Length: 143
Image 1 (cartoon, rainbow, N blue to C red):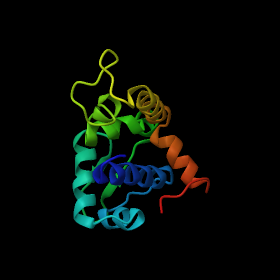
Image 2: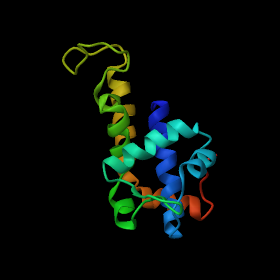
Image 3: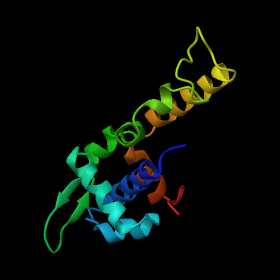
Image 4: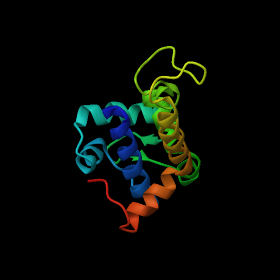
């Protein structure tokens, strides 16, 4: 459903948020290993999240990435979905038709609209703080 970049970004953000709850900085290799992603790809994702001020980065030998708690609580899944995949997942036709609309529906328009709306609602519901706490408490996993 999401692009690979978006999936990795969501998992990376959850991992960094979880480690940030314990006041730990994490480096690119740690993140990549924890989410089973290529290191170079993970580095690009973390840099992009830093560039848009979702993550903080500290340079140097003991540097790494962190997710400030206030940013964790205000950053929702939808923020990363729209950053990496745009909003097409929530607006485009399920069959890829360019002229699909309520007035000119494709054969699956009404059913796909329900799926799209539910997916969008879910991405707006959870902050990265919520997801970090779930993984911290053993209620969810990243692998």
